Every structure is written in C-alpha cells, then in structure tokens.
Image (cartoon, rainbow, N blue to C red):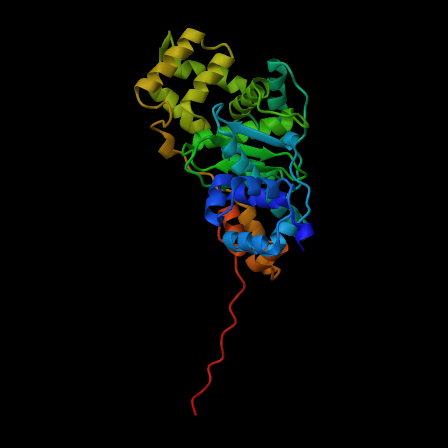
Length: 363
C-alpha cells in the first residue's frame, strides 16, 4: 500500500486546510523536512504515517492513493492583490483542484448547461471593447444592466462557488478546465466588487485561453473587458452628463447610476477615464472624494444592491438526490467525507434518509 502513496494529495489537503508544513508538522509531531520529502515523493511513508494523517484530516487512507491529473499553471487565472502571499494562492488552488474533481463527477451524472464561452484573441484596447460588445450580443444582454452576474456565468455552463476566508488577499480564481469554475472569496463584502470579479474572470476565459496570466498586461486586459461588459461604452457616454457636468460631480446621480448598473462608483470613475470622458486630474479628484468620505472600500449604497448566490451546484445536488444519489455517495466517489465535501462547496447537501428503527413491543 505504501508504494502507492501520492504525496501531492497530502499537499493539496494540507493547503486546503490552510496549514503550512510547520503547522502540520507541529500537530503530527513530525519535522517540516520529513513532510516536504513525503509531499514531493522523495520518501515513501509507512502505514503508521498514512493512518496518522488520514485520522488527522478525517479522510480515508485511500484518499492519498489517488493518481489524478492536476491543474496546470496556464489553467489557473487569479484575481488577487499584487501583494498576495503565495500561501493564500496555494490555498485557493487546492480548493480549485477539489472543485474540478467534483464538477467532473457531476458532469458524469447530470446534463449540465453547455459551456459556450467563445475565446477571442486581442492585444488592443479598442478590440477589447469590440469583443465585449460581441459577447453581450451573443449572450442576449442587449445594452442594459446585467441583472445577475452569477446567473449569467452559470447559464453559460460555468460553475460558480465561493470560499470562506478572513483574508482578502485573493479576490477570485477561475479554472480554465473542460467545464470552467469560478471560485469567489466571500471576504469581499461589496456585491459590486464581487460582480466585477466575475466579469474579470470571464475576461480571462474570453481573452486568455491557454495563456499564463497574473502579469500587469493580462490583468489590465481582463479589467478592461469587465468594465466594457458591465457598462457598454454607448451607455456610459449617454448617461455620463447626468452625473458629471461643467467640471463637477453630482454624487447623488452617480449613486443612482451605480444602483442601476450594479457597478461600484470607483469602477464607474475608472470606466469614464478609460473612455476619455474624464481627464486624469478629474478622475483623481473623484477618487480623493471617495477616500475622504470613507468610500474607498465600502460605498454607502452597497447594502442596497441584492446579493447574488450561486444556484447551479445546489440544483445539481437536489437533482442527484432525486436519483437517490446523496452526499454520502458523492463523498465516497470522490474519496472524501461528507463534512469535507460540504466545506468545499459551502452548502448543505441532501443526506441519505434515515431508516426508522423498529420498536420492539415489551412482553
């Protein structure tokens, strides 16, 4: 059994649980160096070690015997702060790997919406505007506000899920797999910013198929696509005079525009500058105003915009339950336990009905 141990599975599980090598070593009374050698395949652990880590993570020993392909660098698109620590990225990548395995299982059991996002090639900002317009046309969005970004993604075959975290280091992650997955950080409270993150990840799928992202250029291109998708330039140019006239901002009108389009005021200002409607100086004055009023992170209208929750995964589990496939069955197929699975997706999954016990009558 020990010769089949896959150290990568231990690494993914450790990262999923947000543990460093030092953290895990301290809990198992093992050295960091030894754990590193196990994870990288430099040493083969004995049965006692396998039993110990399986018990600690509350998984079966077979969990570590899987030999599955893992995500490659050009399949992972991050939306993260430039100062993000590598450890935070690793945590989300581990979660992404397990979500990928779950979606492969769901696709084998159910007929999910077809993934139909077309990839384009672009290097010029003008063509990004055109690509965003083509996407809106193809997706039947017209020129109006996008009512629900999560539903838009799910309608076109993308799995959207979230991960709970106290850190805002990593905003969002997309996996360019057979069925793409968007993993969103719920630590970011602004619905407008969450919507922008999803539009940004769509930008990566549309613009950066097979390209390693994360550099300034690809992030800038994805941001541009997100801005153009959320507010078409013709609508921005049409409504711009309602909230900016004669060199002055009308913040009340801008707040109303924000609530209609569900885009943050900060992103609206950036979009106006992007289209040449605001000069750098005018844009900067608006940003300074938002900072002075305490709206640099949380804007006062944020609470008025409804939250958008993923729906596709929940629907999948309900459909499977109708087929008599419950949380226990799914977890077993993925070499997980139910608590691990529910932690992964962030929702409760239908369990097997309990068989009523027969009550013996007393003599």
